[in-house]
Image 1 (cartoon, rainbow, N blue to C red):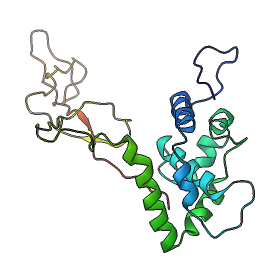
Image 2: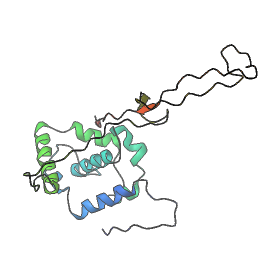
Image 3: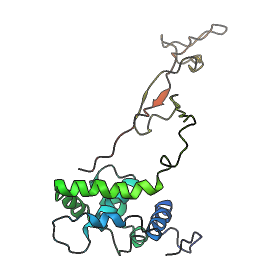
Image 4: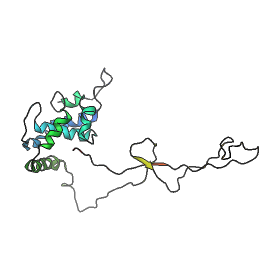
Length: 204
């Protein structure tokens, strides 16, 4: 499959264009062929067990935290399914039954297959470890809106909002200020900070 990126006459044909290009590249490199070594004891109908394992990986990269999000988010993605060489993606219940059918032997086979997938792409094995490895962590908080996902109220030292004067009709006593009388300062409103704690995807 040749990867072509450009404009189409329709408004959109996929919501996951970067993921389509990524999986098309993976298919060219035959990257997921080790998954065929996992022989899951279950009946094969529309999809092979290896194909459903690929689709589970696809759902993780698409941002699905659980398999219950596959149908509303990915089921209608025909272009995304075409990159895997199939006409449509499997139902979320079919993917769940595949994981339930894994035996202890299958889990060991899956670990071995995943190792065969990522080891050729692992830059750690080719790195010169005689040099230092620098890790840059940014733990500073980020201001965000109150409707942001996983946001919570926080405090930034030295970054309080400037105090604002209450207008003539906003005094605590409910009376208007007399001319020349200073206004009562408003309470400081704290920032809302993003909660940047990582959350592991849960598939089961």
